[in-house]
Length: 375
Image 1: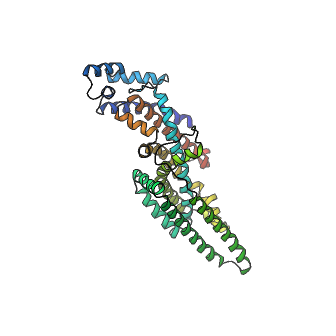
Image 2: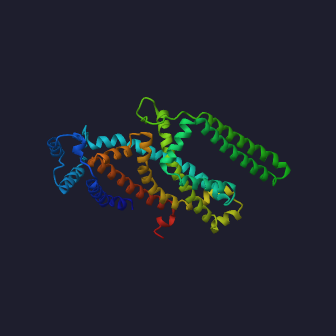
Image 3: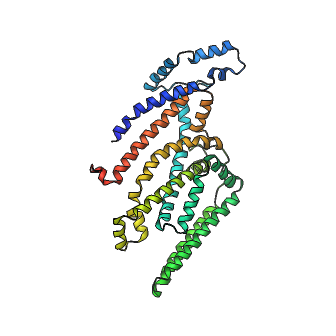
């Protein structure tokens, strides 16, 4: 199955490269004029066009480029310093992949627990609060989300800490009320041990959250510290946190709503009712019985979202001034640096195909019927 999906990579790459090449040809502008300058002599511009091969027919230039790609040669930049395209891509790709990877992890860590909480008792206060918050986040464009995070975490960090502490305190008060109401159903002899265990866990969790909020580092406004730099992993994560959070926030809201709906539907199935009849705890039913069959829609969306995360870095990298693939593509499109744009688009297309192949493998793991050849 994976091999068949990867076989699709060849026609997809061909169609994508062909479409990208001719779309860029239709974009106004001349790389030779960009190199020589707007007021350059026409003869100099013509010499530069001949040097860059831009005086050749479009079809011939495309197939020359395609022949080089087939041999592993992505060509060189049309603009100075005319570095190999592979070198330029290798320098920008790790930044974009790190942002997308961090955003993916952050979104999953937020979406799955939130969906479990919301689906555990549909219609109650946490469900309404989480659903309303998700709708609000989804309505915010990514560029506006980036500006809001910059306003809060960079220019008004004290306000951000106060808001996070208020959210943690509201959650603690709600849990304390739930603990007290649940304790009323316990016999007098077992009520005190139950309350002590739950209160200690609640106070400990609130204390840990408070310490983490107070220890919030100062995030940089722009720039990126690579993992290979002398500053180390800590500075790298600080420079990548806000851009990744910008990407993760909208994805987490979408995934939470999707998974919450699937969980609510799964909780109505007969095997869930059987587990409840056996007296299984609610959270065990949610995490062991209902979560796994509810992940199909989320995994399907993940295959599309990973590509969208990589594409979404275009705006985020511009706002935070990051040297990633998105910023590179914007500069190259403006200058009509076709080899760089072609290589970047082909790379993103390959990631799409490979990720969707992985999604199909995940289906086989999650659903035994697929492994046995049944629908």
